[in-house]
Length: 61
Image (cartoon, rainbow, N blue to C red):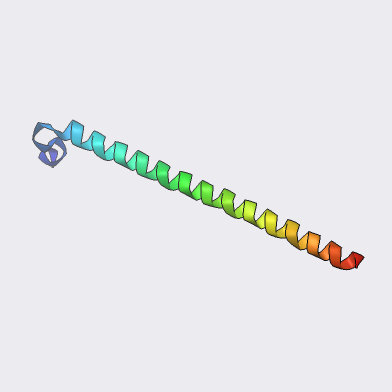
């Protein structure tokens, strides 16, 4: 099992590469998720604002 983790003397570089990949991948997923959530919240606010404008313009007519 130790040989697997040492990977012929290159284990440090290999496992460091895997760790950096995992950090960047998770960060990328989190950034995309936050941007999507912000976009959907913004879109929801715009729709509500438009609905309120239509409701109030109908009430005045």
